[in-house]
Image (cartoon, rainbow, N blue to C red):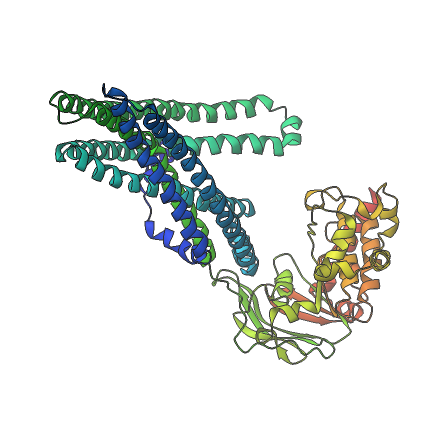
Length: 606
């Protein structure tokens, strides 16, 4: 198992190089701020010019002080003042550049963040069921951070160093000779090649270290999430042993990453020291030969320090840029993801005329092979309640997902008031609908906020009286006002501070407040106790009165008053009729009813 993990991480390290063309995706975003970008580049150049001139000022200062014929102290003072002004100018220009870049970075990341979240909301339910929400959030977060890191390294490190390198080589070529330029170039090339090769070699250890670190964190989090299970079986030591094993694998590669970093730093220092030593020896010989001055020697040393200090961070810059390109690639791949469910170009708003729903010969499969629904046809007349029942896996909940157009059928059509829902706009379709799912997750906010969320676009116009009226219809108002903070009570993450029945009633209140013309109850009582089931049933009947209602039911006792009941089995309609009529048929519905009544009697006896 460990060998397989190593093979995977090594392969991941080998594929660590990514296409730099990914960075081209940033151009449209940057171009929107082209004036500010040009200003950033201008102040970047001004700051570097100031840095380049500083060693020249030092040269003339040293030469002046070395001149035994020096008579005017004011000339040296002027040079020192110029030195100070240039240093201050460099800092000032850099800070202006930083401030301008911050404006670009913040606004650009804001725009990309909004675009990404909007795109994720536009993607189909199939996409979100196939991906972990935490992983999506992490990809989005890392991608946005990567853009900032990439731009910072390019604008603040790579471009300035290249500009300064070219300028310094030209100046040294004029001040000394071509041999000095050649030594500098050879030193820099050796330094860069060594840094890149070492960094790529080190990457495999870094990647493996990160993988084992993530694995160790996963172990710890999984253990804490299952705290009760761990305590129940007394397996604290088992969890500690598993965590210790994961940490041991991480620490082995952490040590490798540390000593290879030391090796990288040592090699870089050796190359820089050797190159600098050769250059300074050549400069000393030039001074002794009378070809150069002491000031030239000082200037050369200052230039080398200015060049080599940023180069010392080349390894980390290279690694950061590589990581950034990988994370940017994941983010832009996410943005390139195509939605399964889209509107046709000619889509029109739904012309609602009562809400008659028709399922016409619907066939559907999630994976393209195993049919969940097979030639399903039935009608939900306007203003009536139709229930769909059947064994688990019969395709009941799939019908609600198709009606909400989270998926499209493989064949057949769903009509509302004789309009194919694929031909109307998604916004108008869902405006007329409200759904109460079996597993109702709530926002980590107040109860009042969660009820009002059904009309979130106009929440500011919702009165407290309307929210309370909806809560009363859902049979949850009394519970809410019994809480110390009433409607301001926080429900916790995904509503975990509420019971299952309380969450369902909040969801029903949400539907009641929306006053949707079409209601969908998707197994809203399947996981509740009998007392909660009765309360939910009353709430459902209050909200559904006079509305077109589709009820997906597991407990048959909740749909005995339905105007029509459709029985599914293995993706097909096998029976239809009212509760009494279906019992008389002595078919699947009657068998399911008898079984549930028997189970209810057994529970009562216990």
